[in-house]
Image (tube, rainbow, N blue to C red; front, top):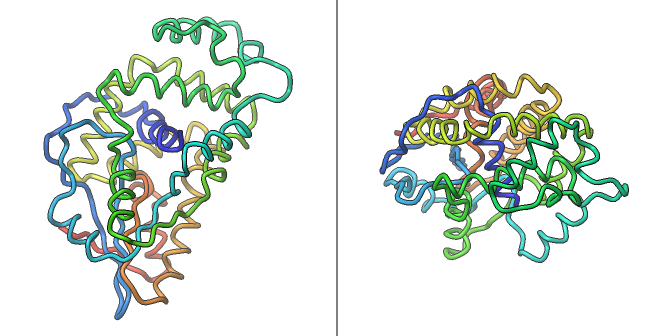
Length: 292
């Protein structure tokens, strides 16, 4: 669900980017390098869900990854049992109310219609908080569109790191990452779910556009689109994008003091657009050079 939640952020909050485009069979995603005398940190923007057949581990990305002794992700996906326990703690309602009861009447009808399309009853998500209902609803939609979270760039990199004995770490603990949504007010969670329900018919075009921009190596266009859409919910933007960018840039600055080669892979939206990690590094006197 952590990967699916990231997929929601990457593919659904960008509703303004509604141009549809087919995913190319070969991608050329953006890669940067921050380097001093004895330290190299690669910055790679990822997408968390992928369509089968997209080739993105090209010579440049592969060479950078192979030369790295450490892979740094947003979070390291925990074992299924541990993830289930986190979800049960954060996502299941404990106030005695149901999701249906908390939603405005019009939203109830929308949710019921969407769930019916997947063979679920109208009250099928009643035990969950609104933010997690958003994860479930969007998670059901993506596979029908041909996207597979099990082959997202993050997961592929993590599996390779494990098999090659690389150090594998994350900026955030799994519970911390899921907690960004859980800590939001119920009003904000319902608003987010409402936006998703309103845009169900646009998930396909939006997801295609996101993958197109990523595959073409256009991080600024991708980041600008994400920032423009998320600015409609300032609190969510601050928690999910701006604050995390600051923390991650600070970590990279500190890590430069230690020798070695690190491959940092985070959602592509964090490396493009205003206030991205690369801009914050520049403010600290660190230049991220594009690797072509």
